[in-house]
Amino acid sequence: ETEQFSLDDISDLRFEGCCLEAVEEPVNMLKHLCMVLCCSPIGKTTSFSSTRRRIRSSSLLRVARRMSSDNGQPQQRRRLSIGVIGGGAAGLATARAFLRSNEESNAIFDVTIFESRMNPGGVWKYDEGASGEKKSRPMYRNLRTNLPKELMQFPEFAWGDGDGRDASYVTHGQVQEYLEDYTNEFNLHKHIKYGCKVEHLLVSSDKGVESDDWPRIQLKWSEEGGTESVDIFDSVCVANGHYSSPSYPEIPGLRHFKGRVMHSIEYDDPA
Image 1 (cartoon, one colour):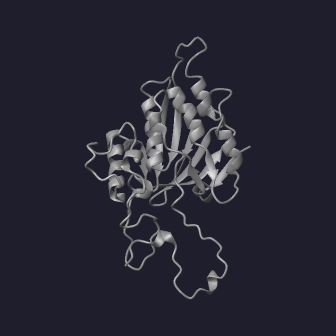
Image 2: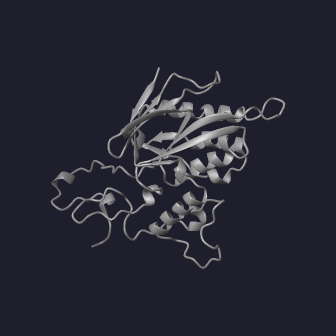
Image 3: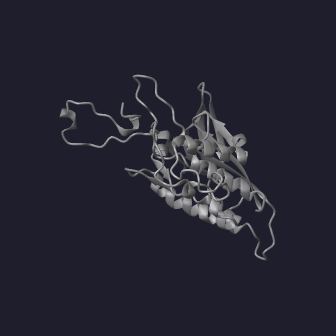
């Protein structure tokens, strides 16, 4: 049996947590990932609810258990393909956690990040809309973070000099710059497919090498220009965020309102 999901289904997911950088030991990291990478639907019930339960006991956890043999000796290294949907903060941290573990674990992770835009950073990349056009991204001109950068930074990559002289509450441009610096520091660009929009996710009945492996996952994506591609992965991490598609609530009497109705995603500045 297979389960197939559309882009609309995928866009209704959110990535729960992004504390991967704090996990040092690869076995514990993978166990942690099995809890962190839980896809939870927002605002509606979808077929992902059953998949979410299966992800918690996915092949990642089984790989973690097989990192060492019963006598504590390392086993032969396995090569596993990992797909990451989204090149924002969560997707970059996820990719870095897998790639860093290649240096010390008994598994080799081949990581591919799918990013729909032509740069990393996800929601933090600000695009000024053309005059008269509606904005399609939630980032607005004068946004500053509501969390200090000291809490937002990744533990292995300090933000600034740490001398306390820089402002703690930074602009969206500074966050974007930090994420780009993080991408450069750990050479993540070569793992990112830019301009790729994931269209379908298919959980197939084809399992991996081990008898207890979780079924493999097929991704279909389109590139700029309309070219479509398909590939198979041992595991897929959904890190596409949940701010790109506006949600319009049902408000009684709204259709009788004579003024302008504007979604917050369209806001840019008071003018």
